[in-house]
Length: 301
Length: 268
Image 1 (cartoon, rainbow over the protein chains, first blue to last red):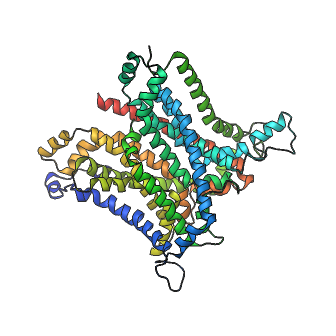
Image 2: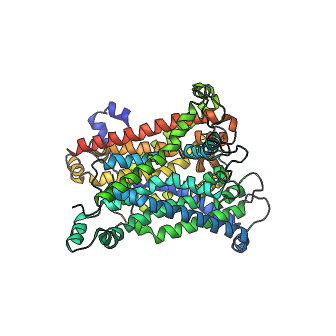
Image 3: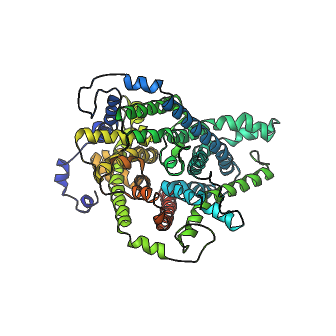
């Protein structure tokens, strides 16, 4: 584009090259890209889960057997439930932690609220893996916390070894990673709150707590729901953090999917079922809560 | 009287805010400290100051290669995502057409798909088509996941641009393309730049999708992930971590400051 700008073609030629940016011209490329590289791949995985398509040689045709096995297997469903509980807990805790942060930024009248907001969010915009690495360094048996404890006199033969490779480590790291991000949608919904409503409540004799419960909180709930979902959805399908800091007790549903597609005992058919099931759960959640996920709320400056 | 917070409430919240910020930055500071620590394992007590981990990382060809591969992939995919994002945002903000809600839902849906599921889906697609995995297959995947982010940045900005400016240019005989180049693009340039940066950093940092469709040239996150399993490389990796974290924090802050500055100037 830049080079085309530099050498402007003569006027008559420009007439001939006149290109109308019609709706199909504008939408054709983005939509085609998403159909070919987003929808079709998902369709292939679904086909795989019904054995309509398979890499295995030999006959294959439509069957529900992989789905049947999945829905009757206690292992996969229990693992899914465990992941749901872990994600729910992480999301709930960090939403509760992020709310006062967002409240402080939006309503305390501080002049530097955008600077402080950037300070809060900046870690989220840096490398995900490196932040996991930091916790690996901190939590390990010979990590920062344990070696610090040895240094100040704890017996080096007995490190606190539950710190790393545990369910706790997975939830701590996930919470650490997502906390800055959660504050954003809550901040946006609190910022757009009309403070005259609070003045009115106060004039009518409501205490600050009453005004918060009856006015502020209900009006900020869309932001809270959006924040919750924006964490819950990605953590539910998480596999990187558990594989790095989770050990066996932090193993999540996502790890199971990766292993089914991995090199050990690959079972792509079952893996496809697990993947599509996760996708369906996420899709249902997104549709049900779509009205809270107004994109504008997330993109506000 | 402040209706939202009492004085003590504000003080309490400020203390809590400071506490959380310390919690968020402490791990990064700890990495910074240990990147200069003269010991092969990151443990207390600290054992002296050294630059050798930074030197080791500069001399590590694999690591530099991985950074280079990631930079190439991020550059290609962010340009692709911004081009597609501008086209889609123009359609969403300037055109009326049937099924707009469905179209915008589709365009934004990569935001909520678990990347793990998307990575597997792409893997099966390339398998089915017989396309060998390479830098290009990662670029294709990263364009898909960056596209909604670019739209979320570009569409609101396009909404703010007065469409009558474009109509005026059109009435004066400029083609749609020329109108876009001379009127619309300069006005949304700050948003284009920040969309580009968001797409770039998204791609540069992306592990899940890349891990399924990457070829023999590994990306930086994939290199990191495997290095995390070998403790001997840990100090070097910490040094790189510090460099990458500092650079990305710098870029983020510079981009934000630049965007605010530019938008204020345009608004005036």
